[in-house]
Amino acid sequence: MTTGRPRSFLVEGHPPWGRRFSSAPGAGVHVMLEGRTTLLPPGGEPVRLDVGDVLLLPRGAGHGLASGPDVPLIDVEHPGQRYVSGPVTIGPDRLSAHGPRSRMLCGTYRLDTSRQAPLLRRLPASVVLETGAGRHPELSAVVALLVRELTQSAPGGPLAVGSLLDLLLVETLRAWFRQHPYENWAAEPSDPLITDALRHLHDYPQRSWTVAELAEAVGLSRAAFARRFTDRVGQPPLAYLTSWRMSMASRLLRDENRVLADIAHSVGYSSSYAFSNAFKRVHGVAPGTYRQNSAIYARPS
Image (cartoon, rainbow, N blue to C red; front, side, top):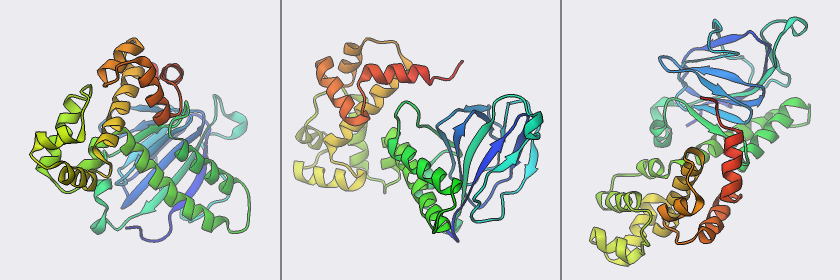
């Protein structure tokens, strides 16, 4: 799918600054390491990016990045080097800069568009993932390794950076599909019976489903259904149900001020205790801690 090695570089922005990136035959990624920036998608509303946010452009869509939504954009080209060991500085001279510095890790992947992976075609034009508050620890670990390689001159640096950029793309995709399990399945070949089963799970996540009940609902034997579901979706039916419930629960904890017992019941748990244990196994933190951390990192309206 890739053609040539991926490229990466660190960017330091000193306000006011604004850059317009033209569309490219590949994918691009920006990771906020310090400060904040504003994504300006063509024809879309500005999106603020904070520390820890990862922006993926799976099809190389043109876009703008700036220190603020009203800053004029200057057309730029991607750096020609495959490996840049020092930061690229944009904006006014350091001595005359005002406001906090923004620091980004930027990477590009040249892709063979005639053989583009179905997963990338299923993604939106731009994907933003938040790694703050302990979310997506694997993705955060890859970013930390990339920053280390780009900020110190160690033997084998270019080789390490190329490999880590590939891993960054993989972990970004994994993180997004963990948040959107239905879209993950949707990349697989169409199967009306499995679509039916997913619809049951999505519409009634609070029900105490068994594999036998799901199989009966779609007209398959238990064994045939379990094999077919796992083959199409990539997870056994009840493991998928847990993922779906936790995805719903995390959204409810972030967006709604409902008591824990109510959220637990709405996603299929008879007690707050059972729900809390399940949530902690999946997300690594208790529901209350997750809610508090989400409030800290929430965007202002």
